[in-house]
Length: 126
Image (tube, rainbow, N blue to C red):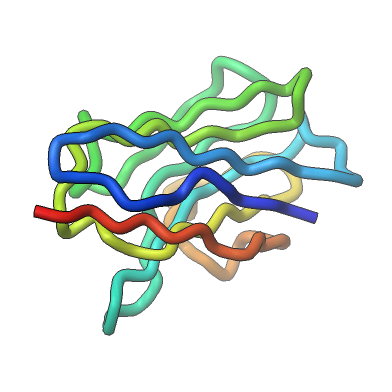
């Protein structure tokens, strides 16, 4: 079971950190992803991280250099640190977990993730 939190209303240029807690799973063996759905748009990939710690991370071009995904396996939490936020980052953000590692260039595919949390809403005002 995944629980996302940390969303809110911020101004352009601000930072925000989202958290995703995972209960009832062998957390360190899972890959995690963050996705978002902007108003009127389809859900899209944001960032992903491989199992364990220090593994590969992946980002959408639109957030590369501004967002950082990280994980604390001891606390069963995955974070999405968002900086230099833009109005176009406004969306509902979802975390997702996949059993095991991400294979090849599949990290952005929603269908490979096994578990999804409820979303947390981020609104960036200009």
